[in-house]
Every structure is written in structure tokens, then in C-alpha cells.
Length: 241
Image (cartoon, rainbow, N blue to C red; front, side):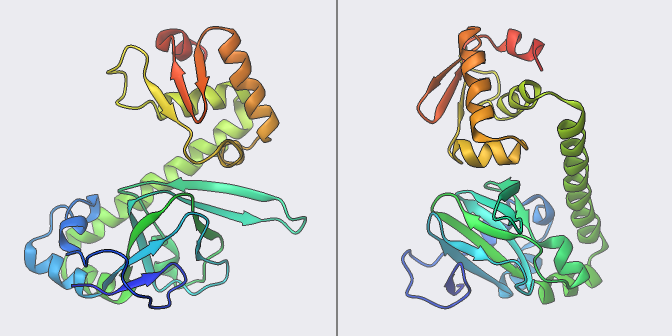
């Protein structure tokens, strides 16, 4: 069984029954091909972390002692400019992780991580990761694959910010987050992160984001229902991306 800690790293009384981490680790892509004994070794250097909505998980400048994987909830990675403006770099959801790159170069966090909802994470110590990398070259390839996908995603983001219009960015976000793919006649996108956070992620102001949603609604492409967006015409929306 694993110990529980809060987002800042200080121990606190468990709020949930203790959970066997191996089951969660086995569902992460980088650990999916591991045998039980290997998962046991990783779990030995893993602890469960709970963060309440709005709680900071790590601050900029904190040492990176491993990486986090989100079991449920949402985490934003962001930094604050000298002028006090916040820029959201990434929104991390279940099954995703953060901190691997800094762990490898043994540098402190260059962003802060904050829970956007009540969140459960696994923190995997860099010591057990490094030991397993030495033992299993296949594990090294899977971790490199994950880091490469994230780098590719950042390159796509830079392309979107510089070459695509605001409307194209919003449409792209909606299409990428359609619930259940296109299985429903009018699928929904949940804006659970909040419009201001999503706007920052898309490199625009909240007002610009809301205006684009209004324009898409007026065109009959979507319907905004509180924190949900119902896609009324998926094919036409795809045509506007």
C-alpha cells in the first residue's frame, strides 16, 4: 500500500481508502507492457497524491523529484509573467503525466501545476524510474515515445498560434475534445477547465474566446449550455477548422 500526501508534499490523514497503485500504473502507456514484478518495483517508489480544486501541486522552482500521472481530475501547467498575467501551457487529464523531461535533466519546475478539479495523482520517484531504465530498455523506448508525442504536440501548438486564426483554434479545440468522438448525433464538449483557462491555453483572451463561441452559435454550429458545448453540425464545424 502507498502513503498519501497532499499536493504540496506534506503528509496528511487519508481521505480515501488506500489504493493499490499497480492497477493504475498498468493502465499508463509507459507501464502497459510491464510484468507484475516490474510494476511492484515502480510502485515501491510511488505515492498517491490528492489535490483539491484550486490547490497548487508544485510551484515554479520546486525540485523535480519524479513525475506525476493523473488518475482522475484535471491539472493545469502554467506560468505567471512579471506583469502578473497567467499563461496556461497545458491541461493534463486522466491517463496523462507531467514532469518527466525535468526529471531526466534534474532541473526544478519551470511552471506551476494547479488542480482544476479534485484530483488524484500518482507521484513516481525518479530513483525507481532510473533503476528501471537501466534494467529494461523497452521501458526507455516507451518513455521516449511519450516525451516525443508531447514535443510534437507543442510544435503543433506553436503552429496553431502563429498560422491559424482564433476561430480555427477554437474549432480545433472543440473537435479534439468531442465526447465519445462522433458517436452521438450532437456530441458534447465539456468546458470543465473553465473558459478563462481554455482561452489562455489557446493563446487568446477570455473575451475573444467567448465572442468566437457566440459567433459559432449564431451560425448554428454549436449551442453553449453552461459549461458544455453541444455540437449541432459536426461536418460543418469540421469544414471551418
